[in-house]
Length: 425
Image 1 (tube, rainbow, N blue to C red):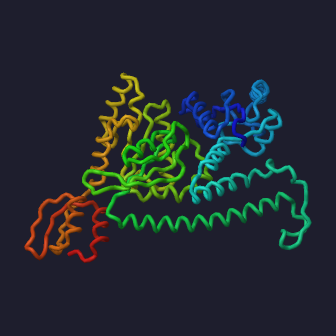
Image 2 (cartoon, rainbow, N blue to C red):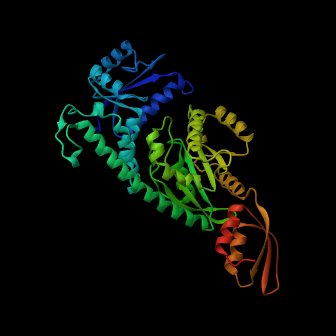
Image 3 (cartoon, rainbow, N blue to C red):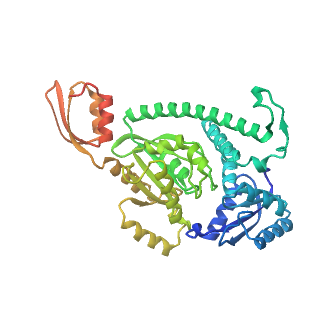
Protein backbone atom coordinates (compact mmCIF):
# COMPACT_ATOMS: atom_id res chain seq x y z
CA UNK A 1 0.00 0.00 0.00
CA UNK A 2 1.52 3.29 -1.10
CA UNK A 3 0.96 6.33 1.12
CA UNK A 4 -0.46 9.22 -0.84
CA UNK A 5 -2.09 6.92 -3.42
CA UNK A 6 -5.26 8.28 -5.04
CA UNK A 7 -8.28 6.11 -4.43
CA UNK A 8 -11.93 5.72 -5.37
CA UNK A 9 -14.26 4.37 -2.69
CA UNK A 10 -17.18 2.25 -3.87
CA UNK A 11 -19.87 1.42 -1.31
CA UNK A 12 -22.33 -1.34 -2.24
CA UNK A 13 -25.63 -0.85 -0.39
CA UNK A 14 -26.51 -4.42 0.46
CA UNK A 15 -29.66 -5.42 2.32
CA UNK A 16 -27.91 -6.28 5.59
CA UNK A 17 -26.43 -2.80 5.95
CA UNK A 18 -29.70 -0.89 5.67
CA UNK A 19 -29.66 0.17 9.33
CA UNK A 20 -26.62 2.39 8.74
CA UNK A 21 -26.59 5.89 7.31
CA UNK A 22 -25.04 5.91 3.82
CA UNK A 23 -23.23 9.22 4.23
CA UNK A 24 -21.86 8.13 7.61
CA UNK A 25 -20.65 4.85 6.07
CA UNK A 26 -18.93 6.71 3.24
CA UNK A 27 -17.32 9.08 5.75
CA UNK A 28 -16.12 6.11 7.81
CA UNK A 29 -14.62 4.40 4.75
CA UNK A 30 -12.88 7.67 3.86
CA UNK A 31 -11.57 7.92 7.41
CA UNK A 32 -10.17 4.40 7.23
CA UNK A 33 -8.35 5.24 4.00
CA UNK A 34 -7.02 8.55 5.30
CA UNK A 35 -5.80 6.81 8.47
CA UNK A 36 -3.00 5.28 6.39
CA UNK A 37 -2.33 8.26 4.16
CA UNK A 38 -4.51 7.38 1.16
CA UNK A 39 -6.00 10.34 -0.72
CA UNK A 40 -9.70 9.75 -1.46
CA UNK A 41 -10.51 11.33 -4.82
CA UNK A 42 -14.17 10.31 -5.05
CA UNK A 43 -16.79 8.32 -3.11
CA UNK A 44 -19.49 6.35 -4.91
CA UNK A 45 -22.36 4.25 -3.64
CA UNK A 46 -24.60 1.80 -5.46
CA UNK A 47 -27.73 -0.10 -4.51
CA UNK A 48 -27.27 -3.81 -5.08
CA UNK A 49 -30.27 -6.10 -5.03
CA UNK A 50 -28.31 -9.26 -5.74
CA UNK A 51 -24.50 -9.32 -5.56
CA UNK A 52 -22.86 -10.56 -8.79
CA UNK A 53 -20.60 -13.56 -8.13
CA UNK A 54 -18.06 -12.29 -10.67
CA UNK A 55 -17.81 -8.60 -9.79
CA UNK A 56 -20.17 -7.90 -6.83
CA UNK A 57 -21.46 -4.83 -8.70
CA UNK A 58 -23.65 -4.91 -11.80
CA UNK A 59 -22.05 -4.42 -15.21
CA UNK A 60 -23.23 -0.81 -15.50
CA UNK A 61 -22.05 -0.05 -11.98
CA UNK A 62 -18.67 -1.65 -12.66
CA UNK A 63 -18.30 0.53 -15.76
CA UNK A 64 -19.21 3.64 -13.77
CA UNK A 65 -16.50 2.74 -11.25
CA UNK A 66 -13.98 2.19 -14.05
CA UNK A 67 -14.89 5.59 -15.56
CA UNK A 68 -14.39 7.29 -12.17
CA UNK A 69 -11.01 5.58 -11.72
CA UNK A 70 -9.90 6.79 -15.14
CA UNK A 71 -11.25 10.32 -14.67
CA UNK A 72 -9.57 10.74 -11.28
CA UNK A 73 -6.33 9.03 -12.24
CA UNK A 74 -6.82 6.70 -9.26
CA UNK A 75 -4.43 3.84 -8.56
CA UNK A 76 -6.61 2.16 -5.96
CA UNK A 77 -10.24 1.05 -5.70
CA UNK A 78 -11.49 0.56 -2.13
CA UNK A 79 -14.66 -1.53 -1.95
CA UNK A 80 -16.33 -0.96 1.42
CA UNK A 81 -17.52 -4.55 1.74
CA UNK A 82 -16.13 -8.06 1.71
CA UNK A 83 -14.89 -9.02 -1.75
CA UNK A 84 -14.08 -12.55 -2.85
CA UNK A 85 -10.76 -13.31 -4.58
CA UNK A 86 -12.58 -13.83 -7.90
CA UNK A 87 -14.45 -10.52 -7.57
CA UNK A 88 -11.21 -8.76 -6.67
CA UNK A 89 -9.42 -10.16 -9.73
CA UNK A 90 -12.26 -9.28 -12.11
CA UNK A 91 -12.68 -5.76 -10.71
CA UNK A 92 -8.94 -5.15 -11.10
CA UNK A 93 -9.10 -6.26 -14.74
CA UNK A 94 -12.11 -4.05 -15.52
CA UNK A 95 -11.09 -0.93 -13.61
CA UNK A 96 -7.32 -1.11 -14.23
CA UNK A 97 -6.73 -0.31 -10.54
CA UNK A 98 -5.56 -2.30 -7.53
CA UNK A 99 -8.58 -3.42 -5.51
CA UNK A 100 -8.72 -3.74 -1.73
CA UNK A 101 -11.81 -4.60 0.29
CA UNK A 102 -12.87 -3.43 3.75
CA UNK A 103 -11.14 -6.32 5.50
CA UNK A 104 -7.88 -5.72 3.63
CA UNK A 105 -8.01 -2.00 4.42
CA UNK A 106 -8.54 -2.55 8.15
CA UNK A 107 -5.71 -5.08 8.18
CA UNK A 108 -3.43 -2.51 6.50
CA UNK A 109 -4.24 0.00 9.24
CA UNK A 110 -3.61 -2.51 12.00
CA UNK A 111 -0.36 -3.57 10.36
CA UNK A 112 0.88 0.03 10.30
CA UNK A 113 -0.30 0.97 13.80
CA UNK A 114 0.49 -2.05 15.98
CA UNK A 115 3.28 -0.99 18.32
CA UNK A 116 3.83 -3.86 20.74
CA UNK A 117 5.39 -7.22 19.92
CA UNK A 118 2.09 -8.90 20.72
CA UNK A 119 0.17 -6.53 18.47
CA UNK A 120 2.53 -7.18 15.56
CA UNK A 121 2.20 -10.95 16.02
CA UNK A 122 -1.58 -10.69 16.04
CA UNK A 123 -1.66 -8.52 12.94
CA UNK A 124 0.69 -10.79 11.02
CA UNK A 125 -1.47 -13.79 11.91
CA UNK A 126 -4.59 -11.98 10.70
CA UNK A 127 -2.83 -10.94 7.47
CA UNK A 128 -1.68 -14.47 6.72
CA UNK A 129 -5.12 -15.91 7.44
CA UNK A 130 -6.63 -13.36 5.06
CA UNK A 131 -4.04 -13.91 2.32
CA UNK A 132 -4.17 -17.70 2.51
CA UNK A 133 -7.45 -17.72 0.60
CA UNK A 134 -6.28 -15.12 -1.92
CA UNK A 135 -3.19 -16.75 -3.38
CA UNK A 136 -5.13 -17.39 -6.57
CA UNK A 137 -5.06 -13.68 -7.32
CA UNK A 138 -2.10 -12.49 -5.32
CA UNK A 139 0.62 -14.43 -7.08
CA UNK A 140 1.63 -14.15 -10.73
CA UNK A 141 3.87 -17.18 -10.87
CA UNK A 142 1.36 -19.89 -10.06
CA UNK A 143 1.89 -21.87 -13.24
CA UNK A 144 5.48 -22.59 -12.27
CA UNK A 145 6.25 -25.91 -10.71
CA UNK A 146 9.02 -26.51 -8.28
CA UNK A 147 11.00 -29.69 -8.81
CA UNK A 148 10.87 -31.56 -5.57
CA UNK A 149 13.01 -33.21 -3.02
CA UNK A 150 11.31 -34.52 0.08
CA UNK A 151 11.99 -31.47 2.21
CA UNK A 152 10.70 -29.13 -0.51
CA UNK A 153 7.28 -30.69 -0.61
CA UNK A 154 7.68 -33.48 -3.11
CA UNK A 155 8.06 -33.67 -6.88
CA UNK A 156 5.71 -31.57 -8.91
CA UNK A 157 4.66 -29.27 -6.06
CA UNK A 158 3.23 -26.13 -7.66
CA UNK A 159 4.34 -22.71 -6.47
CA UNK A 160 0.92 -21.97 -5.00
CA UNK A 161 1.01 -25.23 -3.02
CA UNK A 162 4.46 -24.33 -1.68
CA UNK A 163 3.31 -20.83 -0.82
CA UNK A 164 0.28 -22.15 1.00
CA UNK A 165 2.43 -24.62 2.90
CA UNK A 166 4.81 -21.84 3.98
CA UNK A 167 1.86 -19.74 5.12
CA UNK A 168 0.43 -22.67 7.12
CA UNK A 169 3.80 -23.22 8.78
CA UNK A 170 4.13 -19.53 9.64
CA UNK A 171 0.57 -19.42 10.99
CA UNK A 172 1.29 -22.43 13.21
CA UNK A 173 4.44 -20.73 14.55
CA UNK A 174 2.61 -17.47 15.23
CA UNK A 175 -0.20 -19.27 17.05
CA UNK A 176 2.33 -20.93 19.35
CA UNK A 177 3.96 -17.58 20.09
CA UNK A 178 0.57 -15.98 20.77
CA UNK A 179 -0.39 -18.85 23.07
CA UNK A 180 2.68 -18.00 25.14
CA UNK A 181 1.69 -14.34 25.11
CA UNK A 182 -1.81 -15.30 26.24
CA UNK A 183 -0.37 -17.39 29.10
CA UNK A 184 1.83 -14.50 30.20
CA UNK A 185 -1.09 -12.09 29.99
CA UNK A 186 -3.18 -14.55 31.99
CA UNK A 187 -0.57 -14.63 34.74
CA UNK A 188 -0.48 -10.83 34.83
CA UNK A 189 -4.27 -10.76 34.94
CA UNK A 190 -4.36 -13.30 37.77
CA UNK A 191 -1.94 -11.15 39.75
CA UNK A 192 -4.13 -8.10 39.16
CA UNK A 193 -7.20 -10.03 40.33
CA UNK A 194 -5.39 -10.70 43.59
CA UNK A 195 -4.48 -7.02 43.83
CA UNK A 196 -6.75 -4.81 45.91
CA UNK A 197 -7.93 -2.65 43.00
CA UNK A 198 -10.84 -3.08 40.59
CA UNK A 199 -10.21 -3.03 36.83
CA UNK A 200 -12.33 -0.78 34.61
CA UNK A 201 -12.20 -1.39 30.84
CA UNK A 202 -13.12 1.28 28.30
CA UNK A 203 -14.67 -0.12 25.13
CA UNK A 204 -16.41 1.50 22.22
CA UNK A 205 -16.58 2.09 18.51
CA UNK A 206 -13.42 3.46 16.98
CA UNK A 207 -13.10 7.24 17.36
CA UNK A 208 -15.78 7.35 20.06
CA UNK A 209 -13.43 9.22 22.38
CA UNK A 210 -12.10 6.40 24.58
CA UNK A 211 -8.50 7.61 24.61
CA UNK A 212 -9.54 11.20 25.39
CA UNK A 213 -11.60 9.89 28.32
CA UNK A 214 -8.74 7.61 29.37
CA UNK A 215 -6.35 10.57 29.46
CA UNK A 216 -8.77 12.63 31.53
CA UNK A 217 -9.50 9.87 34.07
CA UNK A 218 -5.93 8.63 34.44
CA UNK A 219 -4.03 11.89 33.85
CA UNK A 220 -2.28 10.06 31.01
CA UNK A 221 -1.05 11.09 27.59
CA UNK A 222 -1.90 8.18 25.31
CA UNK A 223 -2.51 8.96 21.65
CA UNK A 224 -5.92 10.59 21.28
CA UNK A 225 -6.55 11.81 17.75
CA UNK A 226 -9.65 12.42 15.65
CA UNK A 227 -8.71 9.36 13.63
CA UNK A 228 -10.02 5.83 13.23
CA UNK A 229 -7.97 3.24 15.15
CA UNK A 230 -5.72 5.80 16.84
CA UNK A 231 -5.34 3.22 19.65
CA UNK A 232 -4.50 -0.40 18.84
CA UNK A 233 -2.47 -1.69 21.75
CA UNK A 234 -4.09 -1.93 25.22
CA UNK A 235 -2.93 0.60 27.79
CA UNK A 236 -3.42 0.41 31.57
CA UNK A 237 -3.04 3.15 34.17
CA UNK A 238 -4.03 3.84 37.76
CA UNK A 239 -6.91 6.21 38.45
CA UNK A 240 -8.60 7.71 41.49
CA UNK A 241 -12.10 6.47 42.34
CA UNK A 242 -14.31 7.42 45.28
CA UNK A 243 -14.64 4.59 47.80
CA UNK A 244 -11.49 2.83 46.60
CA UNK A 245 -7.86 3.63 47.26
CA UNK A 246 -7.44 3.41 43.46
CA UNK A 247 -8.60 1.55 40.36
CA UNK A 248 -6.93 0.25 37.18
CA UNK A 249 -8.19 1.77 33.93
CA UNK A 250 -7.72 -0.10 30.63
CA UNK A 251 -8.01 1.50 27.18
CA UNK A 252 -8.74 -0.99 24.38
CA UNK A 253 -8.76 -1.12 20.59
CA UNK A 254 -11.76 0.51 18.96
CA UNK A 255 -14.47 -1.71 17.53
CA UNK A 256 -15.89 -1.27 14.04
CA UNK A 257 -18.73 -2.65 11.94
CA UNK A 258 -17.86 -5.74 9.93
CA UNK A 259 -14.69 -6.24 11.95
CA UNK A 260 -12.67 -8.86 10.05
CA UNK A 261 -13.19 -12.27 11.60
CA UNK A 262 -9.43 -12.76 11.42
CA UNK A 263 -8.97 -9.82 13.78
CA UNK A 264 -11.65 -10.97 16.21
CA UNK A 265 -9.73 -14.24 16.57
CA UNK A 266 -6.26 -12.68 16.52
CA UNK A 267 -7.07 -10.01 19.11
CA UNK A 268 -8.90 -12.33 21.46
CA UNK A 269 -6.01 -12.24 23.94
CA UNK A 270 -6.15 -8.44 23.99
CA UNK A 271 -9.91 -8.41 24.41
CA UNK A 272 -9.64 -10.88 27.30
CA UNK A 273 -8.73 -7.80 29.35
CA UNK A 274 -12.36 -6.79 28.83
CA UNK A 275 -13.69 -10.21 29.83
CA UNK A 276 -11.88 -10.10 33.17
CA UNK A 277 -12.71 -6.46 33.98
CA UNK A 278 -14.76 -5.66 37.08
CA UNK A 279 -16.62 -2.96 35.15
CA UNK A 280 -17.01 -2.15 31.44
CA UNK A 281 -17.54 1.46 30.38
CA UNK A 282 -18.97 1.52 26.86
CA UNK A 283 -18.02 4.90 25.41
CA UNK A 284 -20.45 6.02 22.69
CA UNK A 285 -20.17 8.95 20.31
CA UNK A 286 -23.73 10.08 20.94
CA UNK A 287 -23.40 12.87 18.34
CA UNK A 288 -22.69 10.39 15.52
CA UNK A 289 -25.61 9.74 13.13
CA UNK A 290 -24.98 5.99 13.38
CA UNK A 291 -24.57 5.92 17.18
CA UNK A 292 -27.26 3.26 17.69
CA UNK A 293 -25.84 1.02 14.97
CA UNK A 294 -22.36 1.45 16.44
CA UNK A 295 -23.69 0.39 19.84
CA UNK A 296 -25.06 -2.80 18.28
CA UNK A 297 -21.70 -3.50 16.62
CA UNK A 298 -19.84 -3.17 19.93
CA UNK A 299 -22.36 -5.29 21.83
CA UNK A 300 -22.15 -7.99 19.14
CA UNK A 301 -18.37 -8.26 19.46
CA UNK A 302 -18.58 -8.21 23.27
CA UNK A 303 -21.09 -11.07 23.07
CA UNK A 304 -18.74 -13.00 20.75
CA UNK A 305 -15.88 -12.83 23.25
CA UNK A 306 -18.07 -13.55 26.27
CA UNK A 307 -18.04 -10.08 27.85
CA UNK A 308 -21.00 -7.95 28.84
CA UNK A 309 -24.63 -9.04 28.69
CA UNK A 310 -26.12 -11.68 30.96
CA UNK A 311 -23.53 -13.10 33.32
CA UNK A 312 -20.87 -10.65 32.18
CA UNK A 313 -19.28 -7.71 33.91
CA UNK A 314 -21.56 -4.79 34.83
CA UNK A 315 -21.62 -2.12 32.13
CA UNK A 316 -22.09 1.65 32.00
CA UNK A 317 -22.82 3.53 28.78
CA UNK A 318 -20.92 6.83 28.67
CA UNK A 319 -22.70 8.98 26.08
CA UNK A 320 -19.74 11.06 24.95
CA UNK A 321 -19.39 14.24 22.85
CA UNK A 322 -22.48 15.96 24.25
CA UNK A 323 -20.56 19.20 23.63
CA UNK A 324 -21.06 18.54 19.88
CA UNK A 325 -24.88 18.37 20.12
CA UNK A 326 -27.27 21.14 19.12
CA UNK A 327 -29.42 22.42 22.04
CA UNK A 328 -32.58 20.62 20.89
CA UNK A 329 -30.76 17.31 20.38
CA UNK A 330 -28.96 17.73 23.69
CA UNK A 331 -32.30 18.11 25.47
CA UNK A 332 -33.71 15.01 23.76
CA UNK A 333 -30.63 12.97 24.62
CA UNK A 334 -30.76 14.22 28.21
CA UNK A 335 -34.37 13.12 28.61
CA UNK A 336 -33.58 9.69 27.16
CA UNK A 337 -30.53 9.21 29.40
CA UNK A 338 -32.49 10.25 32.49
CA UNK A 339 -34.74 7.21 32.05
CA UNK A 340 -31.81 4.79 32.33
CA UNK A 341 -29.69 4.04 35.39
CA UNK A 342 -26.73 2.71 33.38
CA UNK A 343 -26.23 5.83 31.22
CA UNK A 344 -24.12 8.91 31.97
CA UNK A 345 -23.79 11.88 29.59
CA UNK A 346 -20.25 13.21 29.32
CA UNK A 347 -17.82 15.25 27.30
CA UNK A 348 -14.36 13.72 27.59
CA UNK A 349 -13.09 16.84 25.83
CA UNK A 350 -14.49 19.46 28.24
CA UNK A 351 -14.83 17.33 31.38
CA UNK A 352 -18.59 17.77 31.66
CA UNK A 353 -20.27 14.83 33.40
CA UNK A 354 -17.00 13.18 34.48
CA UNK A 355 -17.88 13.39 38.20
CA UNK A 356 -21.23 11.72 37.45
CA UNK A 357 -19.41 8.95 35.56
CA UNK A 358 -17.04 8.33 38.46
CA UNK A 359 -19.92 8.23 40.95
CA UNK A 360 -21.81 5.78 38.74
CA UNK A 361 -18.70 3.60 38.35
CA UNK A 362 -18.16 3.53 42.12
CA UNK A 363 -21.81 2.60 42.71
CA UNK A 364 -21.70 -0.17 40.07
CA UNK A 365 -18.56 -1.65 41.57
CA UNK A 366 -20.18 -1.65 45.02
CA UNK A 367 -23.49 -3.09 43.80
CA UNK A 368 -24.29 -6.46 45.32
CA UNK A 369 -22.12 -5.78 48.38
CA UNK A 370 -22.74 -8.19 51.23
CA UNK A 371 -22.33 -7.54 54.95
CA UNK A 372 -19.20 -9.40 56.10
CA UNK A 373 -17.89 -10.01 59.61
CA UNK A 374 -14.12 -9.57 59.81
CA UNK A 375 -11.84 -10.09 62.81
CA UNK A 376 -8.28 -8.79 62.59
CA UNK A 377 -5.33 -8.52 64.96
CA UNK A 378 -5.27 -5.04 66.44
CA UNK A 379 -1.85 -4.52 64.85
CA UNK A 380 -3.12 -5.22 61.30
CA UNK A 381 -3.20 -1.55 60.38
CA UNK A 382 -2.73 -2.06 56.66
CA UNK A 383 -5.70 -4.46 56.41
CA UNK A 384 -7.87 -2.08 58.45
CA UNK A 385 -6.95 0.80 56.18
CA UNK A 386 -7.85 -1.32 53.15
CA UNK A 387 -11.29 -2.10 54.58
CA UNK A 388 -11.94 1.58 55.21
CA UNK A 389 -10.81 2.49 51.69
CA UNK A 390 -12.67 -0.25 49.82
CA UNK A 391 -15.67 -1.22 51.95
CA UNK A 392 -18.57 0.40 53.75
CA UNK A 393 -17.88 0.09 57.48
CA UNK A 394 -21.16 -0.52 59.32
CA UNK A 395 -19.65 -1.07 62.78
CA UNK A 396 -16.32 -1.74 64.40
CA UNK A 397 -14.95 -2.44 67.88
CA UNK A 398 -11.57 -3.29 69.35
CA UNK A 399 -10.41 -4.69 72.68
CA UNK A 400 -6.77 -3.82 72.06
CA UNK A 401 -5.96 -7.36 70.92
CA UNK A 402 -8.44 -7.86 68.09
CA UNK A 403 -10.59 -5.56 65.97
CA UNK A 404 -14.01 -6.70 64.72
CA UNK A 405 -15.69 -5.15 61.70
CA UNK A 406 -19.08 -5.37 60.06
CA UNK A 407 -18.30 -4.22 56.54
CA UNK A 408 -20.14 -4.34 53.21
CA UNK A 409 -17.96 -5.72 50.40
CA UNK A 410 -18.78 -7.03 46.91
CA UNK A 411 -17.82 -10.59 46.06
CA UNK A 412 -14.86 -9.32 44.00
CA UNK A 413 -13.60 -7.10 46.83
CA UNK A 414 -14.12 -9.88 49.37
CA UNK A 415 -11.97 -12.17 47.20
CA UNK A 416 -9.32 -9.45 47.01
CA UNK A 417 -9.37 -9.01 50.76
CA UNK A 418 -9.05 -12.75 51.30
CA UNK A 419 -6.04 -12.93 48.98
CA UNK A 420 -4.37 -10.16 50.98
CA UNK A 421 -5.28 -11.60 54.39
CA UNK A 422 -4.80 -15.39 54.40
CA UNK A 423 -4.88 -15.39 58.20
CA UNK A 424 -8.11 -13.47 58.56
CA UNK A 425 -10.72 -14.71 61.07
